[in-house]
Image (cartoon, rainbow, N blue to C red):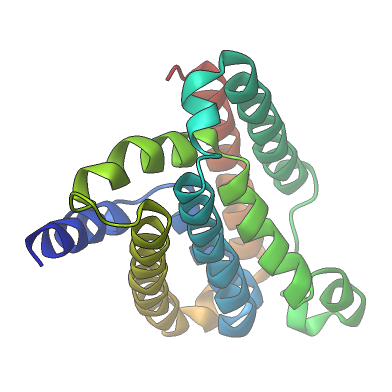
Length: 206
């Protein structure tokens, strides 16, 4: 049980550390409401589970071994974050999505879920992190695929709990955050954050 408790402690600390996923969920919560923010959070955490299964099956090791595979995924991920950031900068909203029927259809639950999922899956550093991090907590002789999946599932649960706390906290400020001027400012600020993460990912090395 010692490796498991060590992993849970380490992954909890890492989950609480603010990053792109946190910014994405908070922005969804403030601008689109807790339901769509929950869809975004589920997409983000499901991406962690997919990475864990991939690492357990040996696919994640490809990112560690192949420079080309890592760089390809890195540039795709950076381009995706850049697209999200530029879109928010150029077209900030003046009304919340739930007040606009047309935008509501465009920014439905599936769109929010996909944004969270692909934001996670297109970040190769998550895969490399899992490849280097998870094996440290696998007991000798244990099933690697099973343990990687279980640890990723634990990470997913911890992430969902933390995101629930974030989303619940943002609910108290929802009325103020939905003001047109505040929405525009938040979209542009979030766009800058996303572009910053895109640059950080593009310039990163393994």
